[in-house]
Image (cartoon, rainbow, N blue to C red; front, side):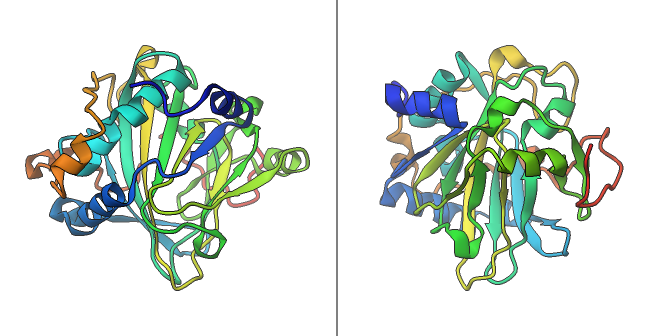
Amino acid sequence: MPTVLTRNERQQFDRNGYFLVRGLFDAEETALLKTAMETDPTVRANFYNRADAEGAVTRMVTWNQPGDGVYGLAARSERIVDTMEDLLGGEVYHYHSKLTAKEPHEGGAWEWHQDYGYWYHNGCLFPLMASAMIALDRSDRSNGCLQVLKGSHLMGRLDHGLLEGQQVGADLRRVEEAKKHLELVYAEMDPGDGLFFHCNTLHRSDRNRSANRRWTMICCYNAARNNPYRAHHHPFYTPLEKVPDAAIKAAGTRFADPALDRVFLKKAVAPAELTKVVGKSFSG
């Protein structure tokens, strides 16, 4: 199956560093993903908290191998993998996936960062990496939707440091300068929408101060030719077996194999090089 993006949409991704696909998953598929995330005992057993600078937390689950559960099949689906292979110019593999769960009135914020700001420290030499965020709930300004700086991936990798609350954040001096030149976009999404974004795209989100939950699933990919040069907490190149898009509905709410519990991270892991707590005033 070819990429879900048209030629014009592909050009927009190259220019802006992201592209939002409305209805990437239909209502039935989204309901299956949402139900599995809510009820899979392996997922429930592997939640951990990631705090922001004010102590508000986002609940998270991160897994390295996609497996045969319905959400693993979504990460292996042709519509996502073929699109990633087009965006990254060749074969990709599953780097990891995660659920980010911002609960009503308390889900924490995320500071400005690039994913490659820390994946670089995992031994990935080139920014041949990208993510697909899938909305399981309505995601808007009120409950802390993703914000991106349009075209910021063209700046290259910024310096990052470990912030209060143990998040990894970008050099705010550079970010503030970038905001004078680049448009800030609120990526408001309905359930089933998918946002493809480059690993150097600057993004953040606000705390959820609304009565509405904001759960998203993010599937991250690395180019096969960008195999990390050292071991870390995400996998080396592992061949990815794509599945037809129809596999999602065929699976129903199939859970992950409990024997694969070992592929779930037990806690947030920051790159070893970023050990200094530098606070929100970090400037490189």
